[in-house]
Image (cartoon, rainbow, N blue to C red; front, top):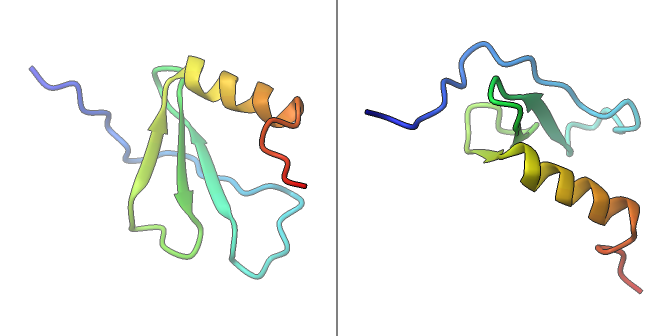
Length: 70
């Protein structure tokens, strides 16, 4: 039995704040509630997949400034 996700047919989207110069990431909702992320310059390249809990922790960290640099 395989635990692999079927990544075909995902609806990829970029932030409305991306500059249009194709140097951002794209995200897609996964059927299992998680999130997939890829480089917009390389749509056929690697895809990072996160569980719903992992993605929520990341979003909370971003909102809390956890990744801000000084």
